Amino acid sequence: MCHGELHLKSLQFPESGVLIFQEDLRLIANNQEKMPSASCDTFLDDIEDIVSQEDSKPQDRRFARKHVVPKVRRRNTQKYLQDENSPPSDSTIPGIQKIWIRTWGCSHNNSDGEYMAGQLAAYGYKITENASEADLWLLNSCTVKNPAEDHFRNSIKKAQEENKKIVLAGCVPQAQPRQDYLKGLSIIGVQQIDRVVEVVEETIKGHSVRLLGQKKDNGKRLGGARLDLPKIRKNPLIEIISINTGCLNACTYCKTKHARGNLASYPVDELVDRAKQSFQEGVCEIWLTSEDTGAYGRDIGTSLPALLWKLVEVIPEGAMLRLGMTNPPYILEHLEEMAKILNHPRVYAFLHIPVQSASDTVLMEMKREYCVADFKRVVDFLKDKVPGITIATDIICGFPGETDQDFQETVKLVEEYKFPSLFINQFYPRPGTPAAKMEQVPAQVKKQRTKDLSQVFHSYNPYDHKIGERQKVLVTEESFDSKFYVAHNRFYEQVLVPKNPTFMGKMVEVNVYESGKHFMKGQPVSDAKVYAPSISKPLAKGEVSGLTEEFRNRLGNHLNSVSHTLDATQQDSASSRMALQLQRLHQDCTLRMSVVLALFAFLFAFLIKVCN
Image 1 (tube, rainbow, N blue to C red):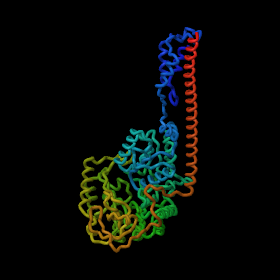
Image 2: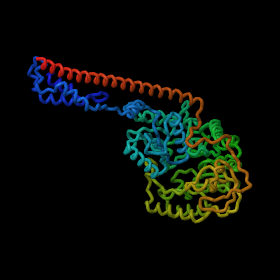
Image 3: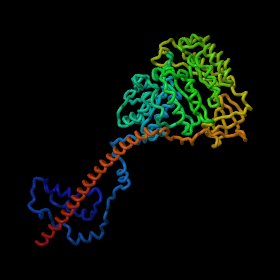
Image 4: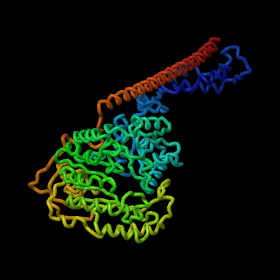
């Protein structure tokens, strides 16, 4: 390197932390311009060759120092401290991210969502209700109808547009994991929800993981993940228990069968233990759910009534049990026992029995395995043996091959029984089902039949005759408009009561003074007794339940692993910062020495010239 280049580089300003007299540098720079250029081809014999008569004299330099203002470059302390506490930008440490969970569909799917949320929260992830602030979206899907899957697909697209990590769950990816819009995305199967933490961790690291297998014990299919896993209840007062998964039917329109498979029931003792645990955590209402509760136990040598009699033994006074959907073929065998159970004071006199159509021809095409007479027999028997019972049902409008006459038979059934709770669904052909290959009813006809049946349903008011009654109701939630608390009476009919915080989770007596299509309004009786069914105080909203000792041990091992990862990352980060600081210190010292040597050279050259 030539002297000219060396000299110029020695005059560069330091990046930080060095005091430099600006006037000295200015004078040096001025002299630099007046010096004869020294090219790399010219060799300088002595330092005097670069000193001229026009160089500054010592007295000039001393005078200039009086007007010099030192300038110090300060580090961004706040940013520096933030870097100290943050892991490197290229590191991904699972267990510290925010997760948004969205669930579509039935109560079984909602229970799965609660279990997944509980496990993730127990492992340190923060479950957030704000989708935009989440690092990962867990989308728990429903495959019953096209609109639900459309919402699911749109949510995936939105997550991708916002660069969110994505994990998919529920019946859609389980039934058809090879769909184009699911490519490259992580999937947790409906029977693998106990491994959701593993899938989320790998997804956060940038991997795509798919767990779609079945739970088996010695070759026998199980009901699914364990019931004692941690969960976060959407409503801390309500526990949803899936008593079995899958069913024994093969309905031609059903896509859920592709995802949930054949019947697999949980043992009675496990279900009873789960109920006990729920009551100990402040739950006052239990929902039993599955794809078909009536088929429970057929695969393990027991029955639904046998389970229910065991459950009612552990229900505390003032708490209630609600039975889920059951298809007609399997409840027919247990009508006498079911009537006795539904008359129990701690069991809601409520049953959901889907009829789907009142035409035997259509039912045969659906492969529903019963006729309309079977459905009527069940309903009539229960209405007779359980006075006031609420029967809810489902109807599909526009199933392939349904004629106007078939539809009119369904209308007559609704007019005859005046179901207080009726779920009317327009038929949607689901890909991969036999019904999708059948000749379809025109879309406009399906829409019109759905509209016509809805008008029939809204033509009667099922609760008008109950105005003036005194009822005991269990308060469990707040209404959508936040104006009332929502309670249910003995028949699981909705009763709106004033928002008195002391009522929540309690059973109170009210006088019914108003009714609507889907509700009644009740005024608490002044001298009524308030029952507090909870054995203990309910968990706070968002609090994790079911942290067993075994899970705590697994959690402790996991957190230790995460802690070691954090420590190692922080140590690596600290080492990197220390090396950087040493490098900067070395650069600062080199620059300081260069400036000092340059000043000394000029001074030495000047003195030699004066002496000569």
